Length: 553
Image (cartoon, rainbow, N blue to C red; front, side, top):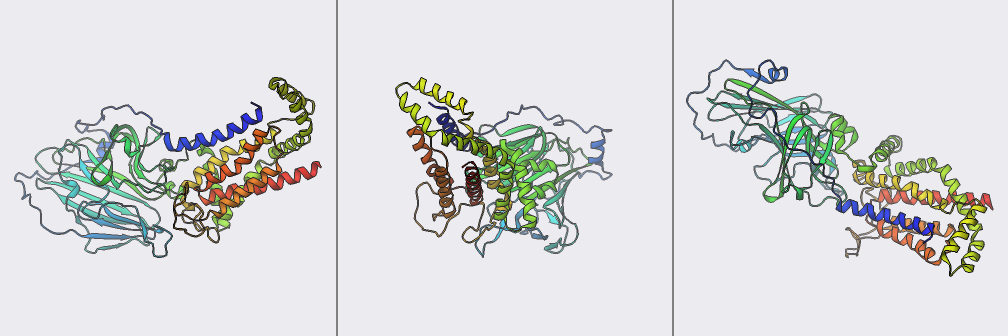
C-alpha cells in the first residue's frame, strides 16, 4: 500500500473515529467516596465560617407543638419580571414554577413562546427544591411558604430586589428563603435561614436540588443532563448511568442540569467537600441534589446557608457573570483550546457585522490566511507531482508485477526531483483539528441558535433545508428538505478534486473521486454554519491552488 493511500485512509478513519467517539465514548472520572467531614458533628465555636453562619437565639423552644394541620389555601404564584426573564415563584414549595427567557424562543415560529428553563409537570412541582437528608422535616419540598409581599408581581427593571418566603413547621422550625434578583444578569442570590426553636436539634444535612424532566429531544452529539464541577474537573453524568452510580463526593464548585444551549445551576458560597446525589424518578424527572456539608442546627440557633443560582443561556459572557468556574460548563472537549478562541473571534466580528453567517465567512478567511504559507508549499508540491505523472506512470508500468521495486523507484524519483509525495495532503490534515473545533463550537454556540444568514438559511445551528418535502428521506434528520448549501459544498469539493493531480494508482483515483460524495452525505445533518465554513474554505483553497498553478505554469 502506497504512502498516499495510507494518508487518505488515515484522514477517512479520523472522521469515522470522531463520529464513533461522539456516539459511544463517555468520559467517566471516578471520584472516591468519602464521608463528609462535617456530617454528624456539632457546631464548633470559634470557627470563623461557622460563627458567621450560626446565630444563637434568645427565644425559648416551643414546649407544646402546634397543630400540624396547616391552613388550607392554594398558595400564590409571585411573578418576577426583569429585562432578561420572567420567573414564577410558587409559595407551594418555595421554588420556580417557570423561568422564561425573554431573548430566546422555543422555536423559529412567529408565535413561539419564550424558552422556559423549568421543564416539569404543571402540578405542584418546582425547582430548586429544599429538603433535609434522612427524615428531617419530612415534606418540606411541598411545604406552603408565605411570600413577604402583598403583590403578585415584582418588577426588577431598574434595581436589585429581593423576595422572601417563610414557613414554620408544627414543632417550631422556621425557614426563610430569600431570592435576590438583578436586572442585569441571569445570576440570582439565594439565602436560606433555618431557625430552630423546636425541642431537638436538626442533625441532617440540608439538600438543595434541581429538578427537570429528562431531555429526549436534544442533539445526540452534545451532552444533556446533570453536571457538576468536582475537584476542579467537569463531571457530566448521563442519565442512563445514574442507576450504577448516583453519588459523587469531592470539592464541589457547582451542580447543574444542562442541555445543548441552556443550564440551571446551584453555586455554593464556596467550593468545599460535599456530596452530589442523583436520582431518576417517576415521569423521567432528573433530580440533581447538592448536599450541604454544614453541621447540625442546634436548639435555639439559626443557621444561614448562602448560594447563587444561574438560570440562563450557556453563553461565555453570561456564564462569566456568575464566576469563571461556571464557564467550565461550556465545554468543547479535546478541541476546547481551539474552539474557545474561534468563538471569541466570531463574537468579536459580530459586533461590527451583525450577521453570524458573514462572521463565519470572515473567520474562515482569517484561518485561511494563517494557513496560507503552509498551503502554498503544499500546492507547489502538488504541481510538481503533476509534472511527474508521466514518469510515475512509466515506473508503474515497468514494475507492475513487483510492488516493492515499484515503490523503491518511485521514492528515488521523489528524491531526485525533491518532491514530497504527502505534501498535497498536508493542508487537509492540518485543517482537521480546526474543522473539529468549528464542529464542536457551532453545535454548542448559543449565539448561532436561530441566527439567520440569508434566504432559506434561517438557523445557522440547524441543517439547511429548502422547502419541507414532508417525505422521510434516508440518512436525513427532520425536517426533510433539499440541503442546497450542502449540495453546493459537495460540488465545490468535486471541482477541487478535479484541480488536484490524480494519483497514478487507479484504485486510489477512484477513492479520491468518491470523497466529495462521502463528505456530502456526512454534512447533510451538520449545522448550516459548519457547512458554510467548509464551503468557503473550499472556494478559497481552489482560488489559492489556481493562483499557484498559474504562477508555476
